[in-house]
Amino acid sequence: MAGDKSKKRAEKNTARLRLLFRVVAGSVLFHVLLRLVWKGSTASAWIHYPLFATAATSAWFCYSSLNHHGAPTYDAAGVLIDGGSDLSLGGMTSYYHDIIYVSAFVLITTAAFSDWFWLVGLVVPGFATYKLWADIILPWIFTPTQDELDANARMKETKEERRKREKAEARAANRRRGFR
Figure (tube, one colour):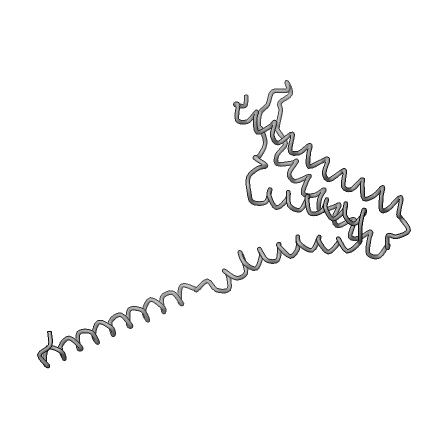
């Protein structure tokens, strides 16, 4: 038996998944009807169909993943067991939402206006490359090893000892000269 929070989350997830399904199915259907059926002669088989398949597949994959994780679970009697994962959290769910919306935008604009809107779809792999570089590759390259950390600590200790010795020598020299 689920609590009130699970019931609210199940309702929110169901509404969100219904909206996302409408966005994905509507944009794909709009593109197919307008561009491939009505203006089919303007679609290049070498460029248009692979890009359409990529955009539609990526949107459908993201929707399916969100549906798998966010769908509520009911028992045989129809009682709510689990409200599903919270789809309003950040992380991969927000990236999935972004991919769905970018794909829908690209499908609708390329069908209605121009093939140049396919370039907007490059935002997704561009952002993925940026995140891969900034969050994984760059820290891996510039994270010092334990040997480097030990060497830096020894060098820091040596510099600190040298600074203390020079300070003590300067004080002693000032005392010999009569300065305090």
